[in-house]
Length: 321
Image 1 (cartoon, rainbow, N blue to C red):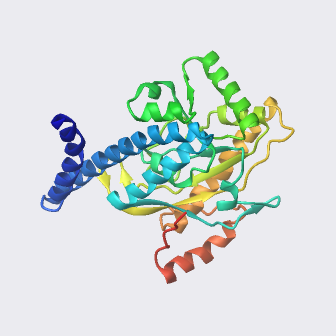
Image 2: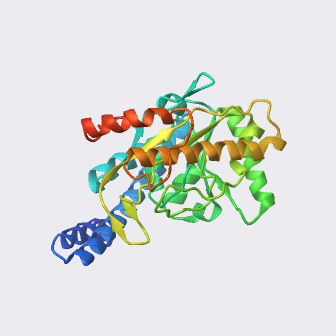
């Protein structure tokens, strides 16, 4: 059993050693050591959370609450990452109301729904841990199904695996997801960009239409979720990491009742435009406007007031959701 103890203890010890070295090395090497420590710590915490998720999923499915598996594991990962790495995604209240529908925490309670979010780096797994609502599952590329711990947990917790190289199997997976959403009121989270942008400024890659076809097919609303650009916290290309709080905004749900497949393009464009406007607005709230003008959208007129509040009141308070 000694080898098992070594296997469990070695990664945390490595992360701590790298972090200690970052306090003693010259600036450039310290930056690399701190980034490596963050990477190792994140992988360790993800594996531990996924291992917990395997057992939690078995128990929850046995008692009829399998739909809560990914929600409970997300909370474990969220708080363990905050304690160990100092990185935290915080849902802020934008106060947006569209057609009587509110954004923020109210929108996260929409069920069932297709939740869509912008995809910046591998750290977006922590974003999921923060915002993931109850009775929701992710979509993931099919190759992840065979990954130890993480793949086992995702399979047990009803993740929707998509083989993007095979249109027939991808369509079948979405057909199955639509039926589950209708029959079990299970929501789905999708990154419509399809890949990470690694953007250093507020930007979105072109959206794939799968999420929007799914929402229309299931006749459930789209709920857009926008994380502020967090290049100041994690820059994968430059191997740089700094602890910090990242703002997340949840926009009001966009209904799809009565829409058909012919409306998918318009729904995609509408959602992406709203998310891009909010991404720019968040960059101004964080003091990183990057020269982009504020969008003329609902809620944007409140940004100067929010900026003043942040300047006077200092940093925001961590939420205990």
